[in-house]
Image (tube, rainbow, N blue to C red; front, side, top):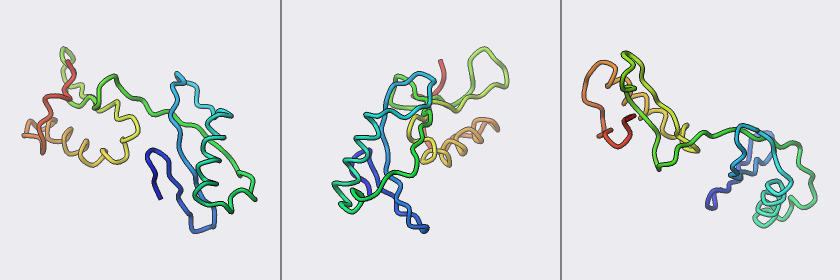
Length: 122
């Protein structure tokens, strides 16, 4: 179940994963009390039975992104043989198959499956 950037994932073992928050934290992967409170309120609003339970654990991870709305994909200018596929932010898993196809095509000098001009490193 997804609402905006938040979601609840029921797992086969009975655990419900409630996520997620986005915070600018530099390179420190830590949970915050504010983020945990937001997720708890979200989960309890959709599944009131969660009020009776205590969270088992929390975790934080880093999702590197760039200033634009897209990642960088393609050859790095001035460095022969170096390609980059980075900055996918929260969409890395979703974009991985297409990113792989794009980079593979560029490596063998074939046309990529979609236009990549906006994503090329400059």
